[in-house]
Length: 468
Image (cartoon, rainbow, N blue to C red; front, side, top):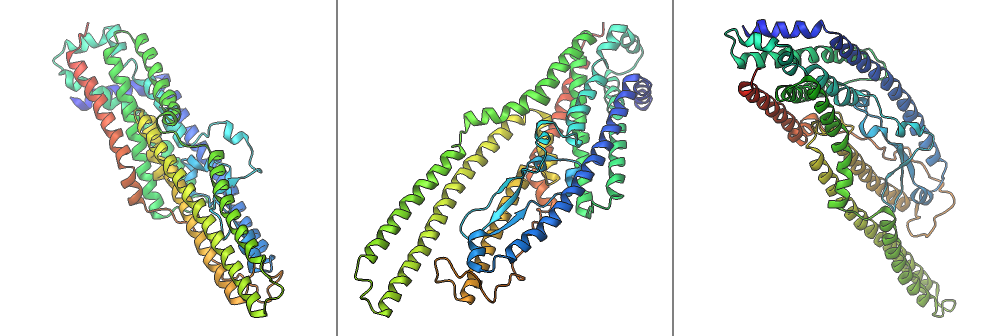
């Protein structure tokens, strides 16, 4: 009997105009988003490859390891394949970092990027599922019970010996399947577009992440449909149900996700970037003043009357003092920046916890991190960048020692043996899927809890509701 009722609900939904509209929107938007973002990824890959060669050539033209240490080498943000599904942090225009020997690297803005990218929302799968499909789930479910109660169909159905639990279960299964079918279709089309693309090479782990993200998307659809069914059971009229669900959608999809970061700034404030820069400048100035005061006191002696060995010893002491100064400034800068990043990370965690009340926000956190385009990916990328900076600094120090320039303030204008063919290259590898799932398991479980909880509320309310 359950399957007969499920088929009845499914066929009824499939024959309605709103299902056709929902299905067309889902399939067209899902496929079009992958097609457009695939072209964007191809352009980024070309730029990344060309810039990598250009930056290497620029570094080769320095001619001096001291210049290489001072001027550094540029590194671009490696484009992520999963941006074709979840754009996430790939939307940022900060795509280039300067790697040097004595400062912490970070990505800087790319002024060649169209600023309109930041103004308009990206129509990726996050948008299709989190915004479009969540709203369509409400349009499908708002009159599942309230509409039949108004028309008297529900009273007629319950006059037969049909258990109420089977009725509400059939309505959920049939309605959910009518939403899952077009999404599954768009997911298959997206997989075909990715698989036939020359620009995107998904590994086995990427396809596993694709399947997991599809499952998480289906769970969010279940959550939103369960909310719609719950409201439809509790509302006496379908008009009340649809207006209530529109208000809930605005709250869950717009207000809660967007207000979280602002509330986090109040709960866990962090100093602004200008204040951090002033702190670094003040500490660095104090160290510089102390260093140059010591140097002046050393030079006040009868430097010209010193022997060659004594003058060489003074120069060595000056060089050693400068190296200590550079290390101290670098250490202080790193301490201040690390402290700022710890506070900022805490603020991000507070914002995430506050916005987890919204299933849409929870879904975004889960799938962007599973797809390596989320906040965690950004933190891992910066850590990898700083690890590369340490490799680069060791490489330059070794080369200057080999060339005999480690004891000079500025180095020679040209090193005869200058060659950087063996210079380390920045290669970033995201963490494996198992670690990503472990980190985001809370969000996935929370979505499942939401789906079960809202369905159980609808289930219990239907068992107790007055059919008339």
